[in-house]
Length: 501
Image (cartoon, rainbow, N blue to C red; front, side, top):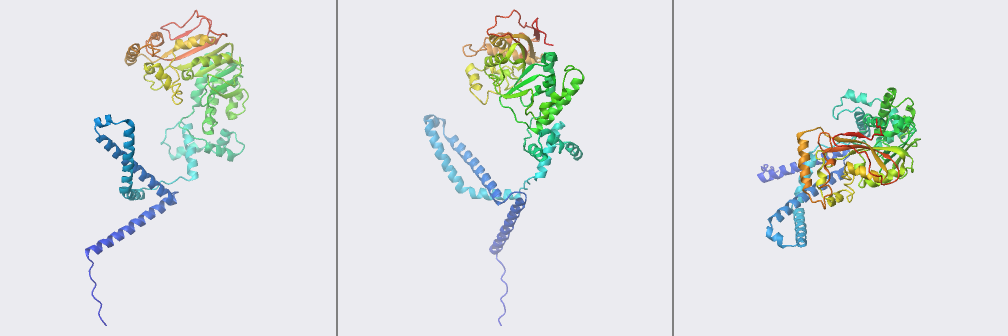
């Protein structure tokens, strides 16, 4: 038999091909392992491919934008000036299409291959289980109830925060008949970034009662304009007051927010009642009814989805007292709000309103919107649905007094509000007024507006930034000029026949 021929040693090319083959097999296996690993945590092949496709598309779009910008930059200014806008748009569209085809033809395979390996190297984002998500929501609710900073919950603190949340609190916050329904509601209601602070709202309520005195509120009909996320005046049921509360869009009951909010308010109300703040007849059970019934079918409390300019649903001549906090400055036409308020007010009723007179775009520069022309400001607010809620008008103190008088309201109390005196504040007032006085009055309403409504009448000559003002409804329209008015240099003033406190 013939002897086998000796093994021929591999040449360099064959060794290189073998190494490439082994490397490709290893990389493919790593890719498949990564795909399988991610699939275990909720990502399947389709998810991975979708992520790759989105990333490839994003990178191609960035490349197209870069090339388009570079090509346009090459054109001379003279050439750009000669061409019409339509021709330029057409040329840029053609250029964009050509670059898109070029990028897709030349770069997509390489980009896709690179993205595949980048995705394979990244650790998978494990999807939380249902139980983990439930615990996370519970802890977030508890953290906000405890007013604790995020990221500072130790294991022991987590356990203590969980106490009181399950299951009794869910049933207490949702007014549901079954625990399963309560749990469903608590899980599905959003945990919004804002937190309703019951103590803060109660302090506002206490100020309102102090303004009017509890004797004025007891057994009366009260109107709260713009109650926001929580009806703080529902607590006035403890004084047997009938409450109407309005808001353009009434928010739904959210167990994770409204439940603890009304519980906190109730605790504060009990404490204040024990100190005699609400008089001897304050009924804690009536005050608690709105929160305990989740705001539904509560006797004596009516929430209405209506604007301040309309007050739909509030009966004519029914209101004894009304209050608003940061509402009238957002009304584009204050005269309409006063007309609506006159319709629902009884003769002799009192309306107190807290206003923020600053430009809401930048509170540190309270007078900037006066530098806008009347048309520009109107277009930014009334003619822009997106901007109107930010600041609805630029009305000053005297304008509110005049508009109220046209609708039958007599001004009985004024408190001018301002920042403490500072060199920066005085300098801002001086420089801004100089700019304002230099504007043409024909299209700048406030160019020659009296300085009394800016800084001349505050006690320290700082810009007037806020206003607390109360009116008494006299009935009729176009009241004659008042014999009494707020004097300059005094921040707080009341009519001689009216006592606020």
